[in-house]
Length: 290
Image (tube, rainbow, N blue to C red):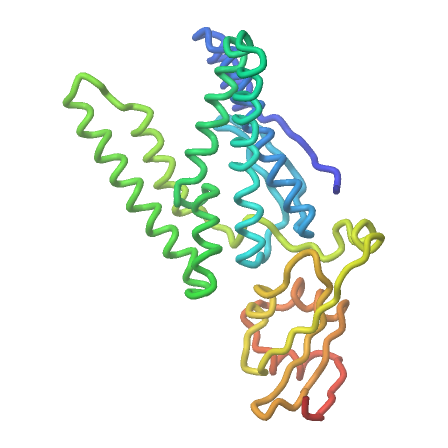
């Protein structure tokens, strides 16, 4: 895998210091380990699918994986998003197995179990930018296309307002849910996070590693009226792709080999029509029926 830079921000040390002051240092340590393993699972799957990630940043509210973000297909988005919660659930199973074999281990690993279970449960909420929101976006992309993210963000706003409403009601009861109020505010702000996607396809990441094992090459066929975005959505990270652009009578107007197509997806506007790109690009015009 590509080397990942890990940076620790001042906010993370504030979190650790506050935990120590309130005698929650052990919980903070277990929570930090769960968060880092969660993000490393995202990183491992993203790298395997040829998406470039460059930094794992530890900050006040946990860890975030950063990269040069551009475009990602719905299927790959779901795989990468599910990797983190699945890793946390696997760690929960490890704790359960450990308790069964060594019952006394419960007293040392209960906090770690709780941290991982909480991470998995919270992240699978269908809210952007949580993992569950990314999964929902990936599922909706097949039917809604570019509108999928907007629908997910609308769900996020609805859930954040509902959560904040419960928090407000709790102020008039003996149990005041301040953490829920903070969580609702965080969800609401997350719905307005700008940026196109969470991971960027990097066609050359670990290419040598995968070529050593052999890669399958596929040819995509699209109408000249389709947009480049339609092609990018069909591209999965563990395959090599060529592209044939055809007209309404299925005559091949142009062919893009692997290098040309990857260069096109990285450099050209994804809203460009394929017909327009054929006229602008130096590719082979064919003109014979399929």
